[in-house]
Length: 481
Image (tube, rainbow, N blue to C red; front, side, top):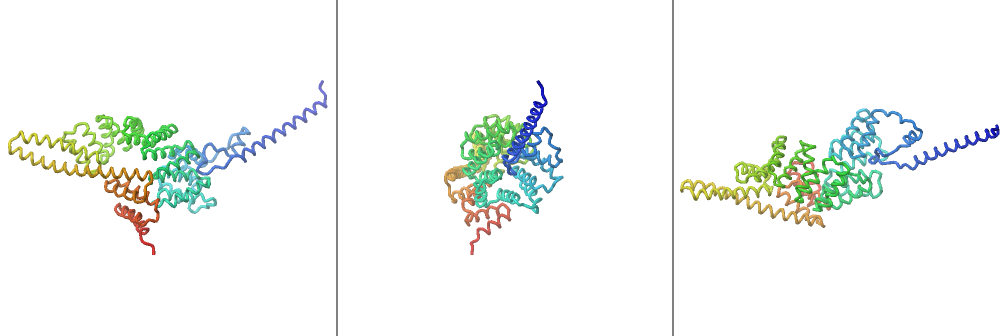
């Protein structure tokens, strides 16, 4: 039976439970806020939840509308977290048009730029905030990373940046990206793999880390493990171009053109104006013995870049595969040899073409009368001279390449400074300029104060017209008083 006394007791109980429930809710929310770790600038992405968003979700109210520039920055952070650097840059650029002094956005935009190898774009972002306060040193760190990634004197940067990673710097992810990329650029394979592994512990879905690791392993002919790294990168981002490119390059280097072709075809279909993709696909078809298909791809590339040396060389090699006796083939091979005289495959094919033509001319000379035979013999002798010179060049080139391969193998195991300088010398003689510079820089990492290394770098930059770097290394090569 209902009574006033029981009604009062029930009402009191309801009030108590309501208050208790509110207290629990507040405590839970406070704990959520306290336990949510603050992310670094580089790590902050779409998965982070701010205390305010937690409160709005718990209360059932929608988050208030952000200003346009803040929406752009938020989208930029999301794309940066997904490693979609072009999209991230576009969002940051849009937001910075409205709010140009946002330090966090500038730093993240600089990172997106240097991950796209747009170092001038990254510098522009950091220059825009050079007069802004920097209490936590984030601007200075970003400047250091941008300088380090392009500095020949890499050893001091590696020591400084590695120390920050060992001390669990909140920006370790961005630091490790620079460490991994730079070590790969200087052909420090083991160090590059180690940095990639550390990076993958922080972010297991780091597509660039998987690809860099694959590149490093591929350079040591560890094809299977390299392929696994590229496959993981493509599982995460199936449409990203550069894992496809390096997978194709590694497979082609391992003489597996059929495996390479799958990725080369993807690149040509998705990026038809990319001459690197066109060249890769043509090489795959040629290696598979499909010269007609290779020629279609090469001609397509030459319509876009009619003076491209490597495409012209590839066309000559495809013609050789189609018909090694034709006048067009010999003419194309001679042109290719002039464009890239150190290309061993071109030299080899040209020698065989001339050998065939010499045999044919000698045979015709014997069958013809003395006057005609003498004329043909003169030209055959001319061709023999050219062929002999090419054969000598080919033999010398082969010996040098064999020597370079042996030295590089020694370097990968445990090479000295002198090994690196010798590898650079041979690479220069063979005309492989980028490889020569890579080994000179690699020597500089081992011995940043070595005058002999600086002398070689000064000579290299002088020969290539880079006077600023020439003067820098020339000064370093001078004896100290």
